[in-house]
Image 1 (tube, protein in one colour):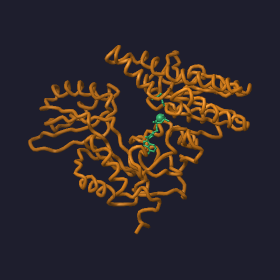
Image 2 (cartoon, helix red, strand yellow):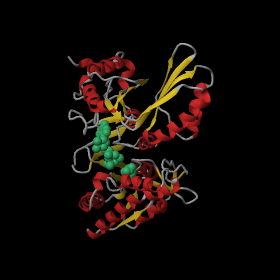
Image 3 (cartoon, helix red, strand yellow):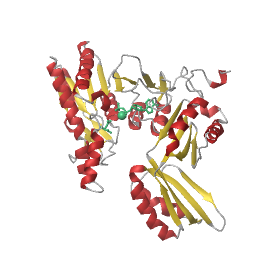
Image 4 (cartoon, protein in one colour):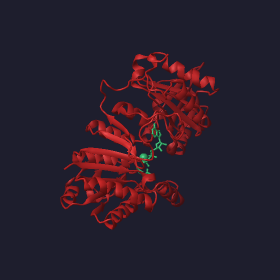
Length: 412
Ligand code: ADP
Ligand code: ASP
Ligand code: MG
């Protein structure tokens, strides 16, 4: 008998009919003799509503209470799902993160899973039940409810699959798999059949929200193969697995965008040892993760410092920068929340020169100005004005011919 973990995202359980359809799909696999663990997200839009409600109460919502509220959407879907299964004549039980014992640290809104107790799930499997687990949530050793960060139900599913040594971990969503870019933004996007953990990590960290980055780290660490596929069709999706020699290694395998960052520039900073530390220490002390950093040189012992922060931390970062500017005697600072980071990703980039310059040329041809650039071995990112996001994604997808499967060097 196989143990199968299936996770369904918010659009897959968006209303009672969809929940019933998902229950039918799960019951078919259960009837074939498998022990099922179903991980559900909240109905789409619900978690966003809770975020807005919290901000109507408190400018900076209390982290413990924020998590208590945010985690509640999943309680609705798992209980409705269990009812749908029972109505169809099979047995199911819904469990919250603390009932399973998904133990996390106490970093509210971005908690990390420390341990998972599988006893409760195994007990219910032994009595023939489909086990339905609330995604996105856990509990601390002090019994406080935590959430794992937005999109965190993917992580719940992969972590459960690892803990249970499951035979399969399937992530069901509203697209057929992982594409060369967001298929909802670019019609020419092509589905990738097989992708390595490393490439998927890079795509997820740069904005491809089809899989939460932490779920991919878990999968890589515990060698859990993930199958990303559509809730609404039976077609084969994308396998996220270890890199092997049969895998496509295109110079560029995907284009991503991230509109959830903001840019801050501090002008005329004294160019002396210790200045960067004076700027970035208070920011990291506030638990704000800085992404791209650029320091320019100027005449007269002064420099400009530009960096990006998550949009959700933008206002707090601006407050900190205001204080720091006064301390270090910087002339002024400006912020821009209307930016997007566009990235091209590919393991094959390691062996190809001119990939970055092609990207810059493509953006220049469209009249798109690049304000920040960052590179690594397998990615190039450019920060641009947010309004050009779609244009940039489509032009890069065309320029690198990502709609075609043949490697670039073999194309005529
Ligand atoms: P779920 O609610 O099922 O977790 P998400 O909305 O989190 O679904 O993720 C699926 C969405 O990810 C798709 O609808 C798509 O718009 C977006 N997406 C972004 N980049 C990609 C990509 N490279 N491949 C597939 N989907 C992507
Ligand atoms: N409901 C949570 C969110 O919207 C978790 C998830 O859907 O994965 O972020
Ligand atoms: Mg998601």
